[in-house]
Length: 214
Ligand code: TYD
Image (cartoon, rainbow, N blue to C red; front, side, top):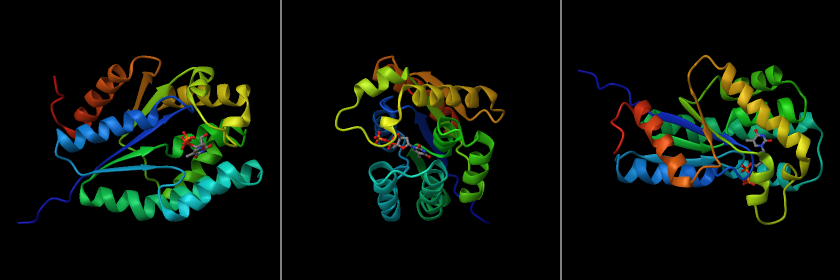
């Protein structure tokens, strides 16, 4: 008798800067590990690998680059991340939670930098050999509220301006609304952390085929 192939679950968190992605991801990861007994891999883009950390420093804190170079830097980070971290973890049966994935490129470079959503999506799909998340949680928040939550000096993307951040927010919402795969969960991130987290758990539990906790 053959054992069935392990089935991992791939969840991405998307949204504007300061929307609370990393907090929600950490809380979800703790619950999946402690209460659900799953192997959990917490990761991020850009910067989920050693090469990715170099690329992250270059794209966020390096010299100014044109939009196409910026898109390629994110795509390079993503290709290496998927190949060396995400796919191997999914093959082991782990749950992979990533702080940003290809929808960030479509929103930030496709719409924010006006390179075109379809072209940027094609670039990312090529980079990842077509890997899409099972669930994508969009933490939607007014960009002004999100940026006000951040501390420290703003990076190159955070400095891109109000109109840029409004375009990326609209792009995320439009993309989620147009999607036909059912992978998106759009949440109002202005609500308290635990209320948002409860919605995330319900959805991820359903995706795991498990019963959601009370
Ligand atoms: P993030 O790690 O969320 O920023 P922080 O650690 O400051 O919260 O993301 C870094 C920035 O990179 C963010 O402004 C969004 C941007 N970004 C893109 O423009 N395209 C992409 O494909 C990704 C993954 C991120």
